[in-house]
Length: 227
Image (cartoon, rainbow, N blue to C red; front, side, top):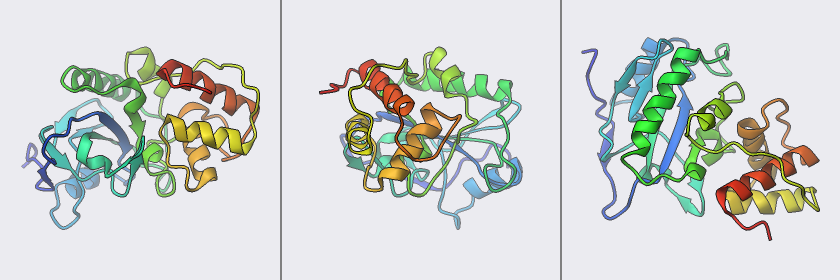
């Protein structure tokens, strides 16, 4: 059944808007295996959409239902991101199976899909996130090879221009990460997640001036006070 939906979904909590968009990579050896898992009731995982490397988009869960893609998660003070999000699985073997660049055709399809979703839901640019952003202690996807800057240029999410900062030690950086939305219970994991998304050339979980200036620029772009 190539067009079958996933059984792994349920009603959303009443009264809540969809205001987060989460991008994942599949992290499995083949697209076929990943798609089968997302439809397997025993696996208890799913996403709303699946995007193959050739750009084909397969809907798996209707947007009005809660898919099971985020797991234990947190963003901007709220846990249970599944309740208020749409999840997109992007085919890529990931760090365990030969992580590679995302084909341009696939990236363009993801961008178009995201833009379409944004017409239907009040999702601020600040809430277009990767799985690693909302679960920094557990996840790395979609990873440092994912072209977030290209998505932002296409109107999906944010990409920061550096802004000057008076302090860039760990305490100041982690405080700013928390204000942007990250779970900072594990400071190094949160910082690595930020770098993986916004400073992918070096992901080490350590504070430095470049990371702090990018974070300051991101807060400014998102309209979040830096004071």
